[in-house]
Image (cartoon, rainbow, N blue to C red; front, side, top):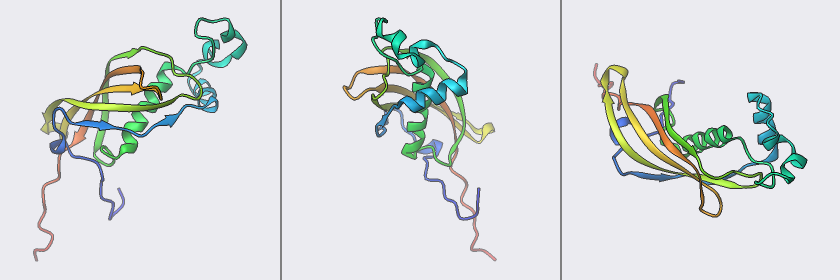
Length: 162
């Protein structure tokens, strides 16, 4: 990190079980779906073929489930609570895809801290976040638990001494 950079994220010791955090919304675009198909190689017609989807039970193209998960993790990062303090994304647990995310849907993430596990040997602790991805109608599209390794608060150093 460059000198003078001060992390804005929370340290492991700042998280509390039951703490709730809500992200801002983000609209899923056709370009994002096309780009995700290119990056992942997943050109399933459910995501890329409008004509095919006209006869499908969902009626129109949907975002890749993993695109929704990726956007959810990005929304969590953009809040700032892990900016400069996350050491690793360790696990995505019990992730469920309940409803499709369509082109034009605006999704946001609601998170709740459910578990804290100190891991001093790794320089912090595991923070488990129960995540819910909701669309503009407030309907849950995806849910699961994201487990992050978050840095411990640095020890105060005596830089004024001489």
